[in-house]
Length: 175
Image 1: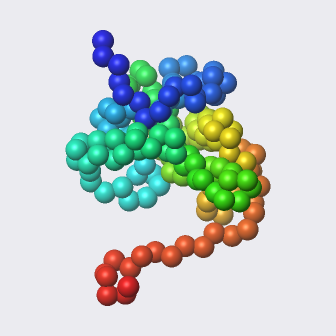
Image 2: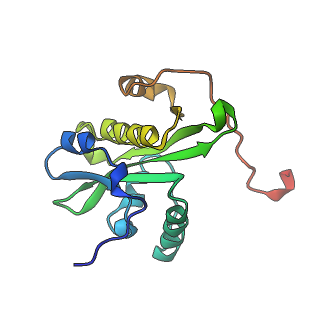
């Protein structure tokens, strides 16, 4: 049996989070073959994903793997169906402030629409916070819509400041 290539070491996965999942579900680092397990399909609940070939997937996966001290993408897999049902990422930023401190940025929290109500989103957040703490981050932050604030408050986050965004124009004439 061949071992699948993971994005980062399994030691960053919380055993407490694993124990809290429903039977038949596992939380783990993203794997090279999760393209076939529907990882991108799960992300479609968030935003436009676009079409990616397996080669494009592998190119991005390999980049993230080469930088696996910064990028930690996790997946919850329904082992009975061998498919990804939830996912999330924490990116570790290196700062000059706070004594060259580290900040974890949580991104792309997604739970398959058919898997709502199983606390998988909560488990993803708990697992990512664990990674941030284990990496030595002095804080973990995220952006969310106003409707999701109560959920993130239940996950231990507090509202602080405001998010601003600038979307790069699709035509280069604006630059």
